[in-house]
Image 1 (spheres, rainbow, N blue to C red):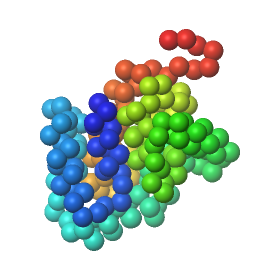
Image 2: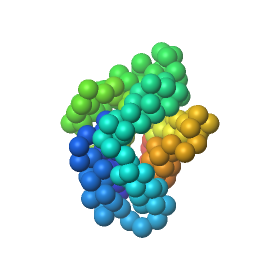
Image 3: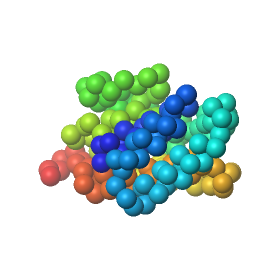
Length: 177
């Protein structure tokens, strides 16, 4: 599952030369099933675009529209103080886990997914908000642009996150495992 989380994290990064090839290479390690099918659709759609077209698609989908931006804290909390609290906790946890934010905010899906791939016990709040955040982003994007290839990526991410949470249920304060 960790390799799939890393592959998903890569897919949420700004496109660059070779990134589609990296996606296809990474797909070799993804088990057959719904996640692989969603990721193959995403990679296939991107493979038909030039780098500048992929950059434009990324920017239009994940940068310019706040409601579809890949910031899980924003998707759930908006600009509420709870997002700031989450980002502070994520920032500390990611530093402890050795995650390089690569210029992103700590609630961006790319570092969040890389964090999940390495954290032995991720922040419970993150595991609680991640499914509704992904659902909200997907729902908004589907309403705005129902043929956008990033929908396949969001569907794959939701499948992986659901499996991850099932395998690593959040431990809330005052609870034991």
